[in-house]
Amino acid sequence: MSGRHDRHLALPGFGAAQLGRLRAASALVVGAGGLGAPVLTYLAAAGVGRLVIVDDDVVEEANLSRQVLFAADAGGRSKAAAAAERVRALNPAVEARAVAARLGADNVAALVAVADVVVDCSDNPPTRYRLNRAALAAGRPLVWGAIAQFCGRCAVTPAGRGPCWECLFGPQEQLSGWPTAAADGVFGPVCGVVGAWAAAETVKVITGLGDPLVSRMLLVDALTGETLVIPVQADPDCPACGRR
Ligand SMILES: [Zn+2]
Image 1 (cartoon, rainbow, N blue to C red):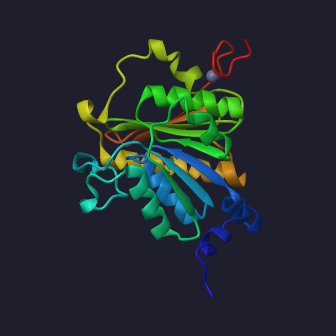
Image 2 (image 1 turned 60 degrees about the vertical axis):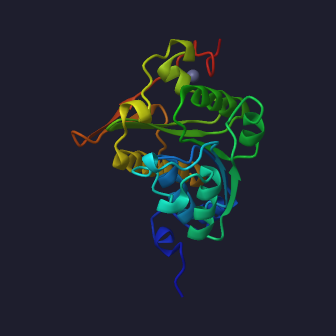
């Protein structure tokens, strides 16, 4: 008899222990949009035991070119609720919890505390900085992806130390010209590429397989077809993870 996980279990280094870790794991996925769609799809398919999906937005037709979790008639529904429903349909063994609320100072610590790994699929700086600090404070690894037009990035912040988002992008007050999907556009497939990569990093973090993108950052340019992995360093003066 064949099972869902047979092709994973055939992989070198992927055994019953790795599958057990996935089944026992809880992942907090913030953002059920263009990045969240492939992340949730692959984490559900891989059998991550519990997915907590945070998004305060509703499904809009103008976003369906990249938010491939949602059916054409899902317009107006809570993205978190529709995504959780899709996850359950993909793999009923996964417990999916929808949190249809904005990630804020009031709920971030509690949500991060019950997660084994945090995945940042959000689209705005305040959420990214908040989640980065909360994950560091709670000692949880953080996988993040980010998209701008045809380009994307992905990296992993290890539990409780840098390099972190704030090491790489500086203080939130100094961040300027952050692109938005509505104003600047976003190329759907690049969300799939970067989201799938973030899902792979998340599975690696949970199972211990391979080398996560720690102290390195993936850069993808879908227009030129080029990818690059560059080294990144922790900033000792980083207010989020620095020693001072
Ligand atoms: Zn830092």
